[in-house]
Image (cartoon, rainbow, N blue to C red; front, side, top):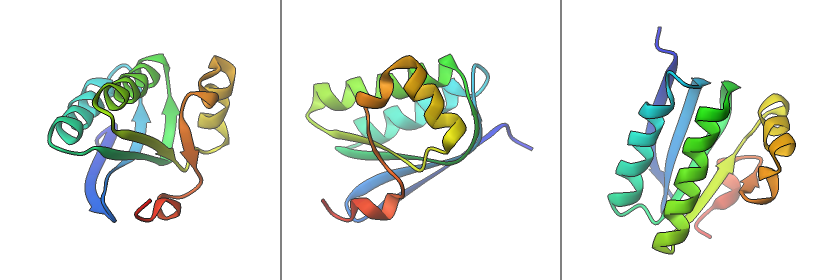
Length: 112
């Protein structure tokens, strides 16, 4: 079993990266690669679906911050969706909850 599965999909004009598993020191490089491919491949609007993320550490958090910075530099949009209570707590403790746009479900984005 993989520690992290990443499913990339296009929905309503958004590049959606659905994560399943652990986002940590071992899997952060895999997410970084997938984000860069989505963002440099023309994905001006990227949403990372955290609904099924079981664990998030500082390395994973750093990759998400890097994605946010790339989006801002490129004039794109970067949204997090579905962060559960444990993952959301990490954003709150680090003060990053106010840096990211977050939605409860990917479907809330529509084509906005």
